[in-house]
Length: 171
Image (tube, rainbow, N blue to C red; front, side, top):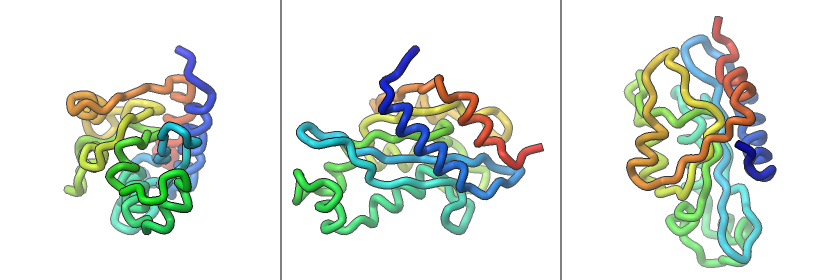
């Protein structure tokens, strides 16, 4: 299936984020981009993230959400000038997530799964580059998103690239 070029462009930005990730043999290299879509406004990147960007075995989606949650009202107004008083909750309800790997539903580290953070943030839609392989755990992130009513779109055109970047550092 062919998807609009803009979606592939955002996924390529997520891939660039994933490439910043320090490879380790026990985790994937993942990138994420949060894009805000509202009528009468151009799509706007709100935040990006990649795995292990912050200390503590952090994941891409959680890092991007952390950055978005810490935007000041002034920063939100600069990003979204047509909506000067928009709240973060309103921003998230019109935000699409582009992630190179299916959001995790299980964390071996005991940290909260990324799918739970996306559900809590109430994002609108999640574009996924590739399903999480069974290397470490059985992931049910896409299904959990669907179950709660968040639209899931698979961008299969970049599946091989997303998987290759995800597995960097694996033997």
